Every structure is written in structure tokens, then in C-alpha cells.
Length: 301
Image 1 (cartoon, rainbow, N blue to C red):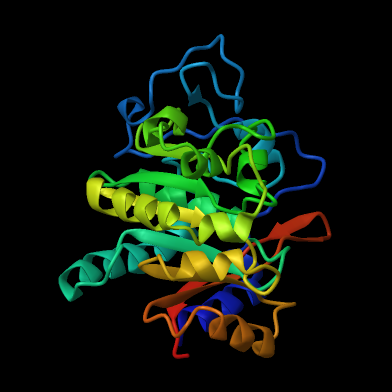
Image 2 (cartoon, rainbow, N blue to C red):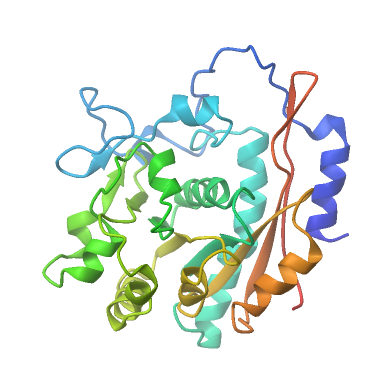
């Protein structure tokens, strides 16, 4: 049974679902699992507001907000959501390691996209980044590459037009570390979409973009760069980033994405050699129960 078929099976099995009444108050962050310690989290400053970055670029993930929306599992905890993303990240990390031996360019650049909006790509990118950040020998840079609709930054509590990717591309005097923000998870950093959205396609297809991605890949070999990009059937920007990525993760909404949409999307990534799929069972409320199910696997084009 494939990973996607297994995910469908989990969805149909009520025993595999997380249960959370709609009127239940936002839960406190669960206890860390045994192999995760407080040292895995960056030092905190209780005077700083959650989500919004301070002057030095430090920010705390807005756990209460994300948790209330059912969007993210607290880092280092064991629950249904975190276990699903442990299973999803493993083949992605294995593909990175194998790609290095196969000579695939930018092997640690992971692009997360979908066919259209609303399929859960940003949800998947954030959870994937947090899960990978819990690895002992990996660090993660999550990049909001959906420049025209920077939903990752919005979900993480960043203000609109926060300096980031586009500013790096437009200003040669800026360095990556000038705009990258350190989260309260030690191994997780975030690069916002940036303050300018003019001529996005030309900006992302520029030589500066190619050089930036290559630099990120080569200079941070232990870092996984997760790109949350625009839906590939709605804009041309995502297909540009696909040419720069070592692997592509397609998020597919189980009950709405058609096979034809997936086929059309695959044509937009220029026969990329490494394309994986995350089957995202979109959140549904049934009798005050929220159900989730995820699967990951590589498929033929």
C-alpha cells in the first residue's frame, strides 16, 4: 500500500483521528518528549511579543494562535500531527542525502507547493520545517517564497512588508543574516517574503535569485531550506523556483485536487527528477471532531 493510500485509510479509520471538541479551550503546549530538551529552544525574552520579531530578528512562534487554528504541533511533542510529520520528513531527508551522492544541484533546497490555493501548502511547509528542526544534525531555514501572498509570514505573526527575500534580491548590500529571523526553536530560522512585490516573476527569475539559492545550498550544508511557494497552476513564480530546487513536495488535497490538476502541475516543473507528494486531508468538522491524515511518497510522472 502506498503512502497516499495509507493516508486515505487512516482518514477512514476513526481510531486514527485526533479528537478535539470545537468548544475546547486552547491547550497549553505539551511536555517535551524525552529526547528534546529546553536547550533545543533558543533563549527566550518574556518581554517580547509572540510572533512579531524584535529589533535583533528574534521571534517566538505564536503557539496559541497556531494551535487554536489546528495548524502546528508544538515542537518536540508527541501527538498525532507531530507523528505524521515525522513520517513525512524521513523520505525527504533521505532524498537530500542520496541526492548529494548523485550530484544533484541544490540538494538541500526543498520546494513546497500545490496546484491551487487552499490545499495546505503553507500548513505543510511550517510543520515540515518545525519537524526537521528537531533533528540533532539538521537546521532549517523556512523561506516565504510566495511573494505576492506571503501566507507563511502572516501565519507566523510577521507584519506585512517585513524585510526579506525580495530585499535581498534588490539590494546587493544586504546579507542573508541581515533579514533572516531566529525563532525560539534553536535550529529554525525564517526568511520573510520581503517588502517589495513589483515585477515578481522577473525578480525570482533573475541571476541574483539563482546565486542566492546556490549560496544558501552550498554555504549551509547541514541546513535544509524549505521554500513555501505560490500554487504552481496560479502563477509562474513557482515553476521558476522549481528549476532551482533539489526536490519538490506537492501538497494534494485529498477531496478536491483532481488527477488532471496534478498532471498539469507536473508539466510546469519541467520533468523534475525528484517530486514527492503529501496527501493533505483538509481539516473537517464532523460532530465536533477534527480529523487529520497525511501521507508522503514519490510517484512517477
